[in-house]
Image 1 (tube, rainbow, N blue to C red):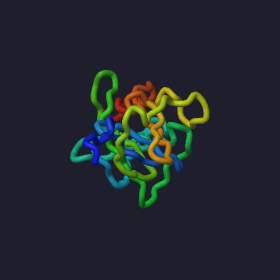
Image 2: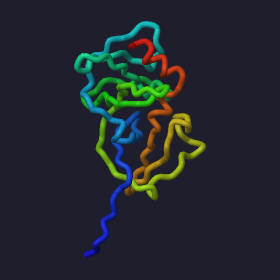
Image 3: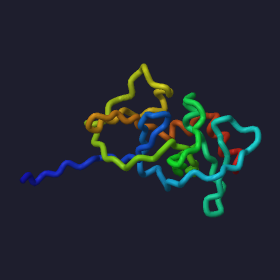
Image 4: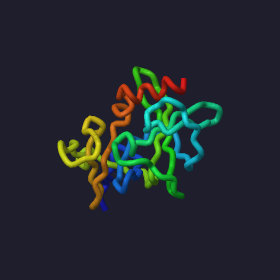
Length: 161
């Protein structure tokens, strides 16, 4: 038996959007919630689906499928809200994102992650940290801070502050 154990350098929470697997760094994830009723905030972007009350704090909830032009996330038994802490303008902000379903936490080392391709993805490559390869699956690893640095998403937090 070998004394060396291969460990993954990076841990990611995987989830699905429109049938594809995506991932974000576990360190960004605060918690995963079952879908709950959202309170719509007037005069916000379509992808800003509303806000939830999370233990007394107002948390904006964004539909990544709408943001990435994949169509609206429909509520099913598997629909979840992934609550994350993201950096916006040198501030840490708590934001919820809708996921069709949350899968699992996986570990990937640097050799299992390739740079984002320049063609064939539904979302802008500036939002993609890389493509993870795990067995026979490809997982799009999102750079969640870059998604939320987008100027139109920064307004999401202004409407809920």
